[in-house]
Structures are given as C-alpha cells and as structure tokens.
Image 1 (cartoon, protein in one colour):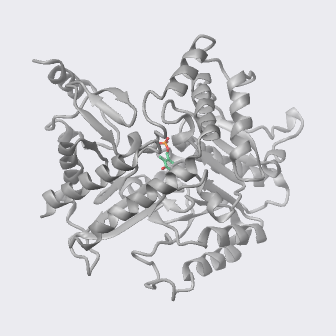
Image 2 (cartoon, protein in one colour):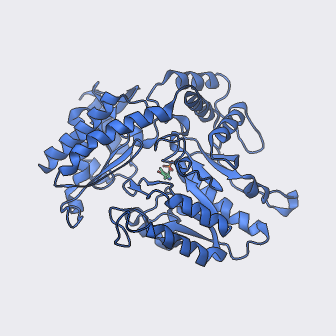
Image 3 (cartoon, helix red, strand yellow):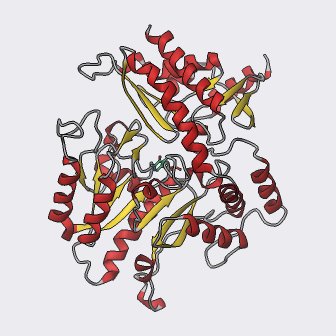
Length: 450
Ligand SMILES: *Cc1c(COP(=O)(O)O)cnc(C)c1O
C-alpha cells in the first residue's frame, strides 16, 4: 500500500471530520494535503491544486508567504504561548494597535480569542452584559438577527444564526432571538424587485428596530455578504440604513466581519463600503493571513467603559480562553497587516474582481445557473434545476459536491455551499489564475449538468 493509501485508511479509522457526512467519506478517496506553495495546495501524490476557496475563506496572500513564515519563526524563537489572563505580550499589543488603525472609526478596544465562533460568542455576551451594567438597559436582552445568518457553531453564535440545515436540531438549546428576513434580491422575501422596491427590506428593518428597540441589546449582521447562506448579497444602502436606525434607537450594531474582513469584498472591511462603524465587530478568518487560529472582537469606548468599576462590583467581562491572543497567531497577524501596509490590496482586488465578474458573466446563459452573486473576491454560482421557478435539485443528487469534485480534474479545489458553487480565491491570485478558476468551475458545471 502506498503512503497516500495508508494515510487515507488511517484517517478513516481514527478521524471524524467537520461538516462531513462520514458515511460518504468512508467510501471516498479523500485528498491528503501535504504542502502549500503560493496559491496552490499539493497532495501526498504531488498533485497541485489551485486553492479556489482560500482554504475555507481564511488564506489571503498564499501559502508559505515569506513575510508571514519569517514572522512566525521569529516569534517561535521567543515564545510560543503564555496566558493572556493577567499578562500581556508584545505581538498582541502591536497587533491590537495596527488592527484599530485600520478598523472602522470608533472601535477602540481589541478583545482576543481564537476563532470566528468565539469572536461572535464574545460579541453577543459583551452586548448583553453592556446593557445589564448600563443602568438604562432594563429589558434590553434580546437580539435581532437575520434569517439565513451564520455566525459560527458554538451555541451562542448558533442562536444568532438562521441556517436551518445546521441549526434546527439545536433549537431547544438556543436562546430565542427576533428575526428579520434575509435581505437579498434573488429570492426577495417580499416578492419585489430592484430598483422599483425602493429598498422595502430596509424600510421593514427600520420599522422592526423602532418597534422592538426597548427590548433589543443589539442587531447582529454579516455586513454586505451572508457567506455561509450561499453568498447572499445585501442590497446597497441596507447596511447604512440599519446603522442609522440602530444609532437613532440606541441599539448596538454587531457586525460579523469574520468572512468579509481583510479586503475580501474589496475594502478593508465590508462596513467601510457604506461608511458604517459598528459598536462591536468580530474578525477572524483572514486575520492571520490564514495561518493560525486567532480572532478578535473589537468594541467602542462606550461599550468598554460599561465594564469598568471597582473589583468587588464584578463588572468584569468573565470570558477568556486558554489560547487567547496566542503570540504565534499575533505575529502572523502583524505580518499580514504589514502586507496591507505595503501593497495596494484594494486596487488589486478591484482588478481581480473585475476580471472575475467578466468571465463569470459567460455562465449566466446556462440553463442551470439560477444566479451569479459576487462582491470583491467572494462569489457564488447558484445551481438550480428550474430557472423560472428558482427551484433546486433534490439534495440526494449532491449537485454542488459533484461539481466541486469534478473541478479537481482541472486542478482546482472547491468547497460548495449546498448547490452554490463558491469561488473565493486568495487575494494574491493572478488574473490568469482567476480566469482559470472560473473556467474550471464552468467546465465542471457543464460536465455534471450537460
Ligand atoms: C466562518 C464564519 C464564522 C465562524 O468562524 P470559525 O472560525 O469557523 O469559528 C462566523 N461568522 C462568519 C460570517 C463566518 O463566515
């Protein structure tokens, strides 16, 4: 048995993979990735694949990027980890300063953790405790969330989420939230279309915030792109109006920039596109350039100050993890942010996303392509059985998975969301690589669906 075969067998004997039907996995020949090189992943048989979803949306500037490698190595010679509970360390301090310098105005404090789910869990707990300690916050205990939302897999972030496929089974364990329909145009929840709708979804959201303000701790959204829902795009102007009405009603706005942060949508943060400053913002995926698990929840001074008091008042935010602010992760984060300082990443993303949308438009005539959605370098191609009815294929056909699998034959790695084919290449991609990615996806769609 060769090495790959042996690793597959041992994987199947010992491992339980995330978001994976293991009964299927056991019948497949999974790839075993051994190395990364720029925008490519290389398996144990030496096959190279373009990393078409940035290793699940985390990688920004490619694998084994010299500046990040060097920074992690240098930090390793100093310290791999020490607790952040009651102690500090240089890379955490420097990263916090750099992060605040690029974050939307008004955010002035960084609370570290180690993944997007915990960053959102923290955001929710922070908002809740803020109002408990604020004095005037009686009754502000609930959260207004969007249907189709995804904020991670811990129970608090699942409570704020709205993807039934992942979340429904856990309903009995979750805290209730108020929910508004996800604002997106392909399947407008109000049956309207743009621009004649006059942004009716934003009107309704405003009404709901005004009506329920007295009971709301915060509104929680993924700004501009609801990623895990299948790259649903918020109509332009919605986020701005949500910020205005939450400010008017003194409701906190929590923006989950875990997926959209660090220039994925073309601006440093998706909020920047509409000049929005949230009260609390979560970042994770791209923070370390896709190297190490590190996350941060950023808060305004107003939120932070509600936690100050005498020791025995116990206004402390009692939350923290063993690996909070891991120094290696912070070093990777610093190196990542310094790349943003040296390179004009937004200009690059703008050119690449232009190339991507140009080549994606060739797919719009395909009878099974229902919708093509893209913002910056986040794109989704929604596959449907019936274009007019916007109806999908039965799940048992695993259309999205089959398309992704097929694309491997063209040397491209994809991970779909149901029947939405996701294209989310590293920001370091070349224009040729972007065109190759779209070509491979189109070819795979053609092969699977005719
Ligand atoms: C991925 C994601 C999360 C969860 O992050 P993890 O690091 O996987 O826990 C939260 N929110 C959004 C918008 C995400 O895309």
